[in-house]
Image (cartoon, rainbow, N blue to C red; front, side, top):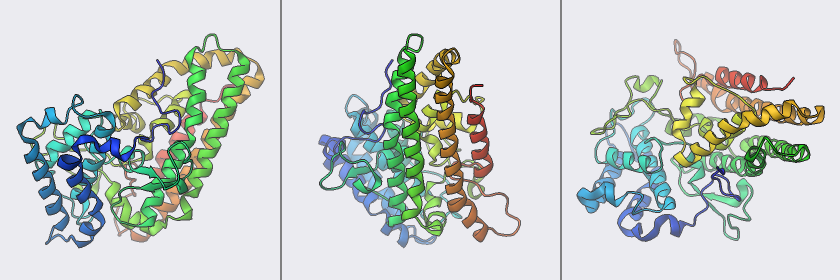
Length: 402
């Protein structure tokens, strides 16, 4: 089995906007895009007494679903939609879901997701094998296009892309997504090297192992450098106060302790985690490659359900194949063992930088806004972030070969 990532963009969607829309632009994508493009304005106008955003979302979705008629599932099935179209539908629909839930503020979420928005969201999610909530791929992987003068082949950094849609309309939010995309692009050479290493681990030459592991280290170091760029255009208070609520889910969330059900659906998807870097397949693949193993009830294992099915399959292949290579490396020269351990050290540096970023953008501002008697701050995924990230870093440290 080969890993299913694009050789240029990795897991970042590389189809043109025209291909993402296809022949269904006027009847399906145009109305959905129109509302999604207006979200910053609609959210700004919304209040608990006047739910401007929720009304606009439902009016649009009801019109789209009515036009599709009773055969909505067939009309939006994989037999009628291309992969880029299915991803685009998921991108748009999940923006609407989270906007509907959080547009009146994080303290007054919607009590449920009504039909037909619930129906459209579940269909869109099932099409790509994901869950019906805003995820990492919605805001980052499926949300960018190259700037004018660039193509997906020549765009390499955050500065080379434009974000299609945001909740807040701020440069800060755009930059958060753009830096995330830059990190993903820097995983491409890491995954290419990984693919060569696990293709035939029993017979791979030691010199090839050394070369590819060197490439992996270089790529992970670039990921860490990219993560450090977050501070260039992302203000901590803007992230925490304005953007973070829209990335949140309704699992382990004090503002909706009973969850938020999808009306008319089975299951109801009442408790779902929010968008998180833990949903990045490429980063999870690096973790799996070095041999990090988590129990089945671990948060990171749960986050695999928030990845598109084809991405998840690549991760599973790495999980199943990396152990054989690790056994080979045990029997190789000290230089090769050191090269492997250097990858683990690079992962540690990346995890450390991530802890620093989360401290700056979540933990520190949360202390300013924390009310007396409130418990520990939770990240968008529903975990206590620093404790969780330090545990993850320790788990990866344990994969060092001695």
